[in-house]
Image (cartoon, rainbow, N blue to C red; front, side, top):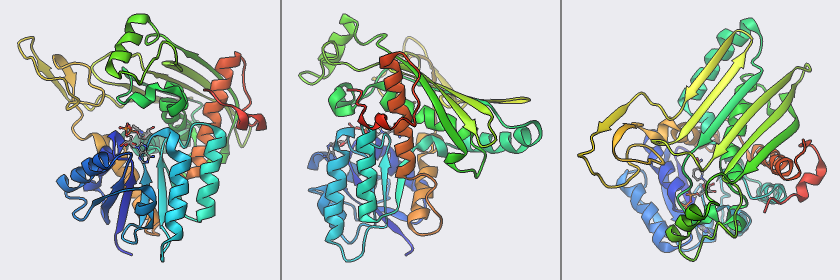
Length: 404
Ligand SMILES: NC(=O)c1ccc[n+]([C@@H]2O[C@H](COP(=O)([O-])OP(=O)(O)OC[C@H]3O[C@@H](n4cnc5c(N)ncnc54)[C@H](O)[C@@H]3O)[C@@H](O)[C@H]2O)c1
């Protein structure tokens, strides 16, 4: 097979990012989109046509129809968090109707809402017998890929391995109502954004080419808080923005979280990751930073700084938008600009990798198994914050833990 024809499940924000990134990915096209409504599927199809990465793309009435279509080779699941199991069940039903099985399924973070759900998602994929990909774009972001490679080759090789990784991602809050509906999202900022930071920090500390199992997570301690959005004025603001959908004052999860994970290497050395996630940060765009520290070296990445800034005086009154940078908060003053966000954040590299993997050119470097392991740490973090104690992520009882 020379070209992978991708079907997207979900036609929202992240699907648009993925589709745009495909202009930089060889040997693939968009074949179709199934979404919560035909209108949103058609919107995503229009994006694929606009960027000329899906000349024959069409909207499908259901995920099962998309999965059953022989023109589609692989699926990228980018729908709401609460639909993971039903979407996987529809894919299983669609795959049964095919003459040639699906070649791969990728699934956006988080793998599900709880560890039990994540294991169920993984079990359905195993039943289908399809290669999987866990979509964690940070592990493909060029700034992190390149700096990790240099630091391990020049620094760790001579001075010894790094022992501390820090990652933070903070912005002013998500764009769709469902993120603010704890039962649908499965949690708050910890589930939504710490999945990136905790996995990126683990990966930075892992020697290039070494398996995930080379670092064993021993302890998780975390804090969850509501710093901003439960304040009456801000809770009211959210309800006005998402009328009859969001009542954050009455039904909230957390808008700030921090976690420390203690890890052990194969030769017994102790390492730490420190991560924080926030929906209460107000700056020009996102605050999105990474550090990796070792005995004689350090690495600093500011993902929100691509080296470009523009300035608009108070005489310029532009329309509110996100055309300069994701989660843009202002249209005046000095603003950062990221020239190519789909590549900068890793979506292009990620999709290049999974297209190659599903075309049989390499093994997927992140699978649903990795998504399950991330979920284990997130659930341990939730439990630690709720019970104000350190949690062993290997505790088999975590499978029953539900943050919401
Ligand atoms: N990697 C990242 O940085 C990143 C960024 C944003 C979102 N995400 C993840 O991507 C997923 C989607 O988030 P989003 O920001 O695109 O949300 P969104 O609200 O913009 O879009 C969600 C889409 O899901 C669709 N949908 C709802 N129910 C469905 C169903 N049963 N079957 C098929 N589609 C259905 C909706 O119609 C909508 O098009 C989430 O799991 C989120 O965590 C990842």
